[in-house]
Image (cartoon, one colour):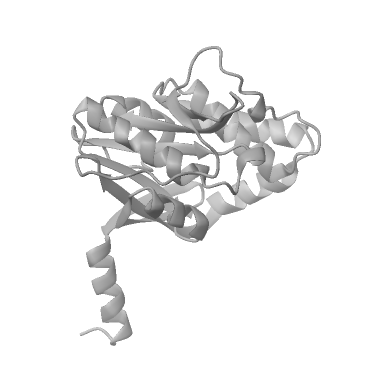
Length: 234
């Protein structure tokens, strides 16, 4: 409920700020829509060399004094989509899920952020995201909230930072790190695979009059169902 109230608050802020396009998209999507995401996972107990970005980066936990001005929604010239994206990051920062990691560039500025969420945060994940993710097992962690500031995009930072952040999970006895990406987002899917993640699950997300229904389908079963439809069933 808390996560929902935060989203409603941000939609109101967008309307008041004259950015109704994103609000209309969000509302119509929740009236009636159907979409899919790909679940990817990585076995962090297996050796893996993180790909290099086009600039040197260092990964560490978010610190209280870090400069997050790249999330300023009042910066001049922002599109509705950019404001909407930044509001999502700010909601996560307010969610109480505290396991946020950042990548720092050679200029000392943050160039990437993402949450590495262990199973101990299952209740907070449920409170914030609802049924969007399956409950984490003790040997699992979730990567969520990937964000690269606009000035650092196109430099291979996501794959490098994501791979390094995922590796931190092994320090806590976690074996599997999972993440979800919209199946139409080819660049992010490619970045996840460069970070050592492989597809294993499909999430089907449907809205009917603001009610969300989620189904998780192992890719083997999804492929078999698609094959059956193609061949005319049986």
